[in-house]
Image (cartoon, rainbow, N blue to C red; front, top):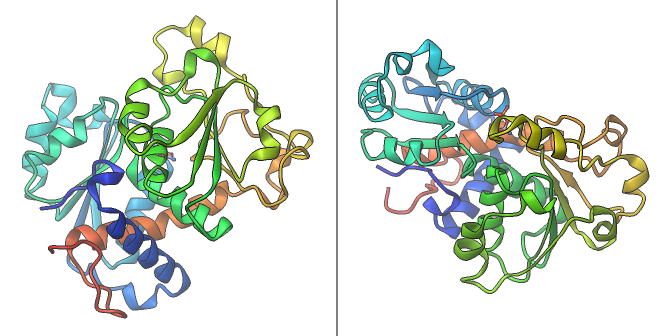
Length: 316
Ligand code: CP
């Protein structure tokens, strides 16, 4: 059984095949509408979500399958002390595939060791969010036509930002990318992301707290929210919230073809006046989310593309 816990759970070729499949389904979903007839997706969400849970469910429904699950640990037997390991052993009897979000880093990985069906990490604490990363790659490729030789600015909460950690890992697989990490000193990228993702392939990166100075040199800007739920102290959060607020005036400094991505939800880090700018790509990401998650489900269930006959994951 294959699982999707981090971007590199799939090889680079598998990731690219997944993006191609999502692109195909986005253009013409009809041939895929019954591929999951009779299959069930379980969404086990121990932490709040709008996009990830609903788009996984939408993806399974659009493939002809069904869904079950819980949104909030208080509505499951986790509230009585049941472990993640026991929960997935149980749910493996009810579903063919599991998407799990959990506030603890590593919980989906632990779940995958006990599940009899594929487990998808739908976000674990401040660690990883690989399905969001595939959405981000799809959106960048659509906007820029490539995933290499790009200068990508990541801005905001880079310490707890799991989407940043996973996208950094994914983009470091491609040649010639430059990484600009823009954050307050206290929210810098964790050391382990540098040692695991950037340093082994000698990626070029810099760290700064100055967004405006960097904007003219960026090919892609990835904004993130300052995540109140990850802070240990309210005082610390209040000190850092609102530290970056992108608006139309600031965007005048940026190239006209620099997409602005954000995994959402946003608070105030992208002002509403940016929404009508052609560079705003965050609702494209939302749109792409359904097709990426359809592709992830098909890949992990080993269901071939009926149009090409190809499967996404080797060895299935
Ligand atoms: N992008 C994302 O993970 O959003 P949700 O928290 O709403 O799922």
